[in-house]
Length: 108
Length: 180
Image 1 (cartoon, helix red, strand yellow):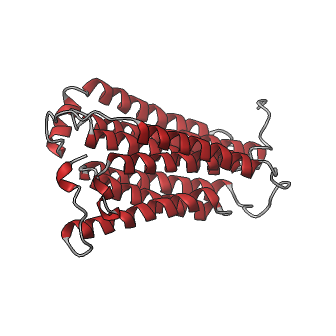
Image 2 (tube, each protein chain N blue to C red; image 1 turned 60 degrees about the vertical axis):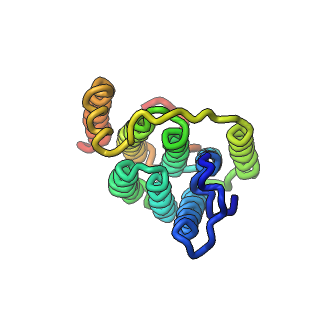
């Protein structure tokens, strides 16, 4: 199997999904702003979507299930982004900062 | 997976060119992800996220689902990235102002965690013997539409309600404090 034929292998996509997931985890740990953490969480969701789509293409008996699952992941990610960003804007209006270290108190 | 594709394609055959396009898509995905989680400025980070999502959409094309690839570009590149850029413009005027130095441990610990998780998943994927089942249908756009409104209609409606509540909640939360 040469390097040009790896697009037809399940393992290729699983490794790509794992790499995306790992980059998202790295971003979540190292980022200091809330928006940066949100961007990293989008990477995590993309990695899991790639995994679902890979299993859907190569092993699943019904090739619709994984695609529908990926669509629902997209819908949930859009809802999460909208809610998260409005929370971030509300937090910025209150604390004048979106640094995760500054916004440590729950009191409004 | 498929034994007929095991013969190594040459560079200038159709299969070889498809492989080259696939490698370009993988490179776009990885480079975009690296920009998204490493750049100092958040605007560049969102741009990296867009690049990464375009690469992921290319991967979906290779996984036999152009519909999900189109939705990926429409929803993520078109909507989510624009929403995040709006939030950056509204809430992060002082990008350069660092509030105290970042912790020394955060970078290495984050890298160690990410490397452990990635390595674990990779080993798990390579060591497992995946069973291949016979396909029930072709997974085309028409089949997706039919199943979405028959087998998955309940989930479809629940997701619609979740999106509606998310929109209303986002409006209510972001509007708070606007009066004073």
